[in-house]
Length: 391
Image 1 (cartoon, rainbow, N blue to C red):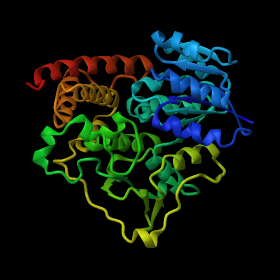
Image 2 (cartoon, rainbow, N blue to C red):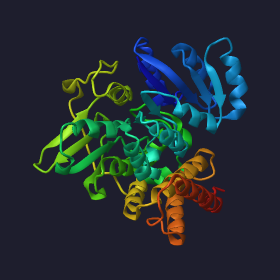
Image 3 (cartoon, helix red, strand yellow):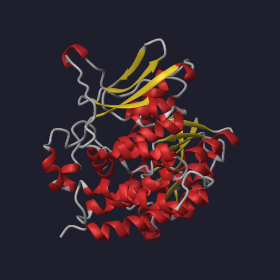
């Protein structure tokens, strides 16, 4: 029986992970689950999976979670320190699905135990890629990608020499505003941005898909995880979301990974690796689909992709600044403080401000420096947002 922990179990990735594990109750022992304020769902999951520990990230939710799990053998804890302690509990496989930079520290703590980390928290690689990969190497741990695109690349590279790779192409649906007139984007609302044409995801990642900030993070993630030069990473808009990534080799061959837009595919691959297990995902009928479409992304519509290139060119701690500014700008958009198009403007301004005042590519990438520049970028973003608030 494999011991598993799920960080972020009440989010979209976590829910899909819980679904797969619940289908095979005799195969897994659930060491710990973590969630946010949805303590009712966290408690429900803990009961269903007989989890050893349930952790809410918010100390003020402790009493509610404790009450919800009264009479069960599940231990209850709350707060950031409890999350880190949960990451030290012996487990064979840990899902890192906490959204945002908050997932970095539990992921690092898990790698220090020498375990297998299924990484859905792309922000960890964006903010501290070299640190994360070095920690895994030092402790003999393994990182398996869970983003659908990076899982697809990982699978396409199985048995291949990375030196033979000529290019990696990751695809994007184009998000909720793919077909909107550019002029209409300035008035787009958070509710409109949070409606994805293909994938069922949480609010924040769905809005990031509409702005293509999600894809910008994934471009940086591709560079950090696979060690591929930035100029070898391409993005294509693919409205059907059936081809998740392609890997081109120096002999001209192009290996594509296809699958239904269902995150249980990538999660299940990481959960069962190096084996393949039967998964409850739809099988593609290519004859019924008929055609697949691809297009180059419009730079005017998706400025986040240009900013990702800037981050990779700068290197060092630029990823930490980029991600923190993006998270703060997204908060402001959801709160109605700025417009949809202003999110990219805020991130660009913060990158420029912090880069002028700091040598982002010379400072050592440690947990302390990552957290330092994360905090700095959020402060700068708040200043920029105050100057750009909608009237």
